[in-house]
Image (cartoon, rainbow, N blue to C red; front, side, top):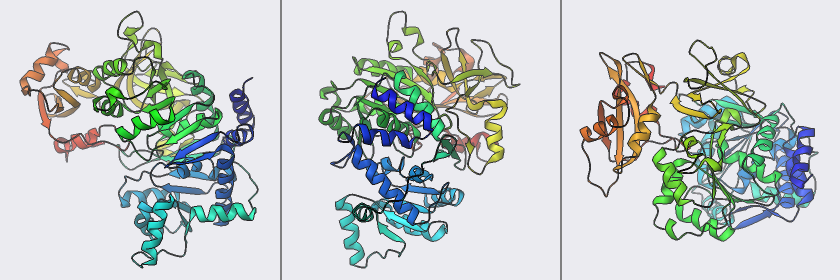
Length: 553
């Protein structure tokens, strides 16, 4: 048994994610655990910092099951937040910093955290949140020396007045470690909620997804062999840590005694520079990130020689982009992952051997792969009956990775988890070999003249046109057919712009006529994106459906 297997076995036996941190600190104490803004902490230092933070939380009245929220960019403190509240059985709540203040208030009123950690950039929001959310008893201000120095100067100059319940986290951690008066550890275990993720809210008010130690241990144990990760790998953490796609990788990193290089946000030059200078082995990106990387002039000369594996997730990748990625990342193992927050997050994965443009494996490109070893899948009809291979219906999943439910929403939980299966809301079919092909969201499905039309098929066709930079297909109201297919296009700036008819004809040459757009509109501004870079079709549909029916959700 190697060290990684031993770390996972120990965590599995205890049911505690925190065991991964303890194992790493004991077995790889001097290995780097995280690097952020030029500062690196070893696994021993990280475990000590997490213990100190747990002590501070306990001093602020945080008890088992209480919530600790974080508002800020990716940072080492957010990395540590995946472990530190759990040390005393509390729940971490990483907040989407892009939400409007009112939306943040909704989340905090829902989960009622006792402690809020915030970065200096968000201090004004934190002050207002602490005033509007009475559950918050203590606010810890995190940040690097430079940002804290600016904040302290502003405070001293009376341009900013901090409430008495605010303190500086790094100062408090240092004092706690120096005093050596640390709280006794009592980590949460198997069924206890470890992290509460608020979904992106693309279908209405955000829901808090409760993910347990068991959920994350299941995902971690399944993902390491799935992606052929190796002990000591260096992971680039660039997706937002309020989203599970980036966050789940932290547990893999701990189990492998790896090194997380954390960037505050996605920036192409910084990503390329980090890959080269830190000799990054692995990264998880979303399709828009891949496109931005490949399109950037620095990509052609970037040194990617250290990269072993890159995974794509969070949104389907158009076929045209897949072809570009395969060519651009030649020699690097590519995986496409289908998952969601409620599944912690992996459901299926398309193995690297299928990311080829020719040969016997190329016909699987376009699928999202086969179920992960820890997941069962089935496809059902609208009536709830299981469908055979090749027939499209709703994708259902079950396994120890599936959430325990939505926070404070028992009715929605019951609907999502009915009959022992998680109902994803995604439409797709399984082929004869068990590969899943997605057809879009069930709610995105367009019903036109009695025909079910899935936008992703049309989007793949449009994305293959050389003049198209980005596209989205939606259903718009039609007096006769109920809905009509409408394409929204953002064109490349350096090519001659075809007409609406040209694009419709282009589709008619490639797919059935009933699936083709009957109208096309052109955007000059980027598509509206969710915090995880999914195109917000709810926003695109609004001008067409406002006041008519429920297609806005």
